[in-house]
Image 1 (cartoon, rainbow, N blue to C red):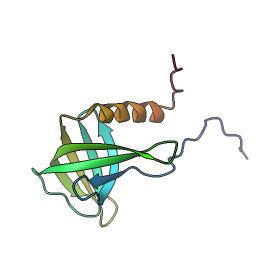
Image 2 (image 1 turned 180 degrees about the vertical axis):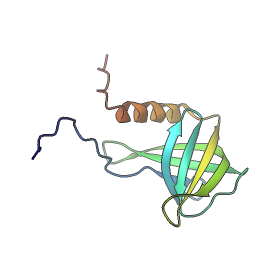
Image 3 (image 1 turned 90 degrees about the horizontal axis):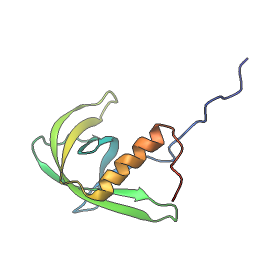
Image 4 (image 1 turned 90 degrees about the vertical axis):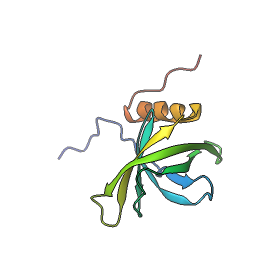
Amino acid sequence: MFTDRRIERHQLPYFLRVFNSVTDKPIGFLGNVSEDGLMLISQLPMMIGVDFALRLKIPMGDGCHQVIDFSACCLWCHEDATPQHYDAGFSLHRPPAEYGQLVRALKQYFSFQPLPASA
């Protein structure tokens, strides 16, 4: 029986939650990201054509969070394969620089490439 692992396993310790930036209440989880959009997975359907004030809280190494607030318009929403869950696609309005940094960091992490050496 084969027991040696040849590829290092990368597991996420938790999911990235998405919050309403006005109320700071969670509305779902980040499904995927791009430079100018994201997919939200939630337990409630999102209204299409509506602008939302959203917030990401990115965990930092010291137990604190980096907060990224932004505005996004819901372009589509449909039921997820998981019962009682919905997927919604958002287009971001003028995403902040921190959002772009998050997208690049996630691409780097999920490509399983080593981080670049610090200068």
